[in-house]
Length: 289
Image 1: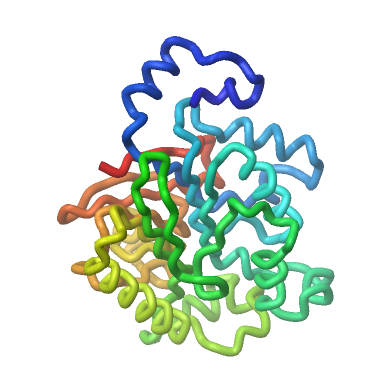
Image 2: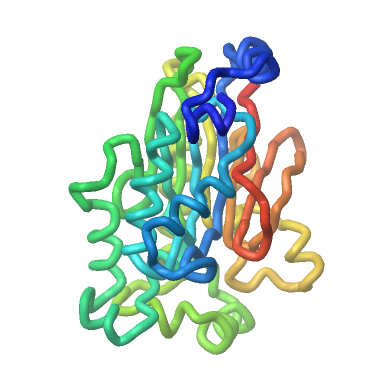
């Protein structure tokens, strides 16, 4: 579908019609991460509409949108954005990032008391549209949805956490990262979160390989499960890398957290990230083939 068709109700152009006809049998995945909405604009209703219009892809099937974490430090922003963006898509699949657990102000801390309560307020809000699906440890690490082409797509995902078993990783978490100050009242360590989610995600991925009912699998994590270019450039992976068994990774993998805008293939697996906070990038797309 063409973006202006949705925004203005215009008829399809010939170019749009040809695009839809040539791709009608392919399942399209749109993806974005690291929006950090409060950095872009103050909480004013019309500003959400303007921002969403600026990031909508020019061409898309508007079927699945994957958000790989870090929508905002504030639930008011996150809820409003999800309600508005979900009007454009058949399904919106959401993974939480570290900033989605933050309590950055005294007001937020008094309101929620701990980060767990903030998460529950976000993902179990009864006013959230039914086509918004939270995937991860606070809801369910697996969501299976049928595509327009009648394929069964398994979305497997979670935050994934950080390995902090080395002294350098632990130092980074406690003294460099904001997480240790702004994620409040979570009594398990980042290493324990990582161990738990790694085991859950790898078990799901292994089980799916023997499930005939699943046609395609997409893994979504906030923290990347592989080494990326930013790790090489910074010569560090502290709190920005959470390895999974490479043999279990599916063909399609989406991640966030590193604020990279990349797509690449490695050992037959495809990896996508679209961290838009410091860019003017739109939502990006790929096809399951």
